[in-house]
Length: 175
Image (cartoon, helix red, strand yellow):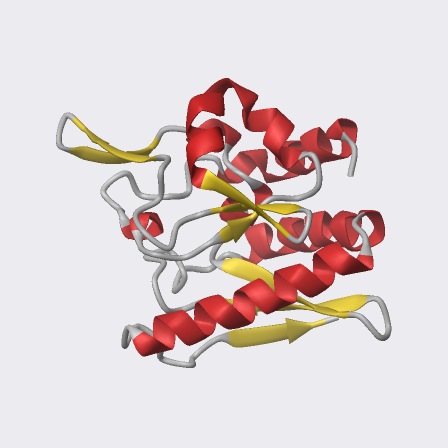
């Protein structure tokens, strides 16, 4: 995926840049976000943290948040993501996430209800824009990236269940 496509995805999701409540700290919890191809170049100014906290696996980049997210900070008694305006698309679309169907080149849009305080709100506008973003991603990334993304989400769901944070109440919206 080229940088122009990535900037387009950020532009589509721009209306939701302030959707996360500032008092929320749930993104800090142990999970992993996957970067789109070339997305690490958009957060290059945080290179010192990228070199220390993003692991390279299967040729793709993952934010290593099996421990606390390296971009999460508590400043002046407020929780914040220090790269919030530049955060990865995988973080931007939460509480939504895709499950890619590799056989027919489609995806299912899932909505997590496990962690996110906004997940019970009416997010229909955001859902529609996330679908636009996922349409672009589905056309633009290699099959191997989609396979790795599906595997990562299965691992994270399994990990959340082990921690007792899984209620299996995800709502699937299929396309």
